[in-house]
Image (cartoon, rainbow, N blue to C red; front, side, top):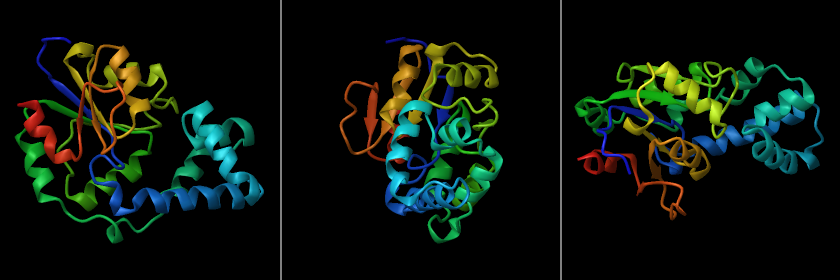
Length: 212
């Protein structure tokens, strides 16, 4: 493992900056199913299998729908993220204080769209704490875990050495490519990392101690 100090931290959003128990992703998943049925015209009986296949083959359901059904990505993200975040998320003063104390450059790196990310940060009262937002449109719809997404993220962060970067994410499949590119990785999850992460924490609050 590199001895370079960590100068740049990339954070995922959903189920990383807040715990999955908040239920945000469950509501988004329901809206994805509705979109597939109502907007893409997919029979309800086929939705679950198609979602799994699109996620595996294309990285996101949106990319699968775009490639195979010609949907408008902007319309997709507006629809699936049209949820009342205030019912699920609340200001997190502890997380804000932790992020404020970190000297590293901090970027959001997410497969979500910028408008939704800004809403999440506002609901958590974390607005203004990040040096940039690298969303799905900033990467040209190239998403994690595709290698090009990480290269674009590096360019968006002024091209720091990969060995000085840290990715914090809740999915091992998103961490493995970053690790292969020389980044250091932290899995935020209660399950075992399975070798895809350098470190594992059960909540985002443990990151500060880990960095020290």
